[in-house]
Image (cartoon, rainbow, N blue to C red; front, side, top):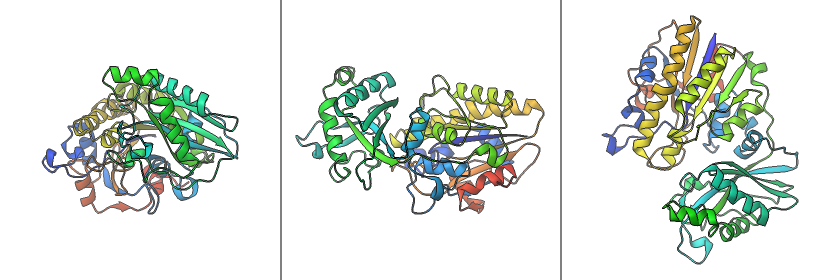
Length: 401
């Protein structure tokens, strides 16, 4: 038996007037998704427990059967693990975005958050900026490490106490004032502007008509996570495929093989075919469960890119789901497919919400009473609701942990 899990991050949305009051899932051309959904078990699920922040670490932990209330320690330490960083029990990891702030205002606190991703800055450019931060702001207890695109990491040994951190994608077009964390973190963020704003990398970006990565934004602190082995829990040899360090880190902490795909970017221009090929290769090598995460719809939601979000959903259906299912069909072995977003990222809100998401579980050789279009409305109409996402894996595999 083979198990294929496909997570189009942030795919769920709300009705959009520009789409004729349809959601991107309803508007997208996704014949393979809809074909499977006709014969699948379809319903809705809440991956993020009530009262917790609807982040991808929490939601994907739940999908992989780890109760977020027990295991969630923040996304940053998971990303640190994926980056190969060693953390002691006294270390705290922080997500360190490079972001674009407005030019107006002599006071940093009067600036506006224009872009949480700095126009999705390239990894080599960002690495130069992080190196400059490490030189100027790093010390013998605090270190800055480059990641992918705008996503980076700061580790602080025995750090100062902290409270709530605002997520940079939660206040696009709004002021920094009122969103800064407590000291000394706020001062560290302010100092980064003086280092980055006129850095040669950013001057070159301005000359090319691109937004500068002129500040950092710290958020999602956490200690080193301790997940149990997914394979031991479910008796399945498993792999995870993702472009983002967060999902890779969850997989690595759970003892899963993490597969890197060249050209996988985390946006809608990602290497869809490469992810499908990697999943097929993993099955050929004997993997029993392959978990493929695609960041593209989520990033489009954050950036309010409606056309690109609709496109990415169709691409996931036809460039990832179709070839993997066709391969599994050709093997002559029973298989199951589970497909769902981890959380919604509505275009109109540009951030994550706590609403339940649609899911489908397709089993080869078995027909369930599914839906004609895999979307929020039709999944909700099935009245099959799972309140705790961490129980979904048991339903999918038919196993008890």
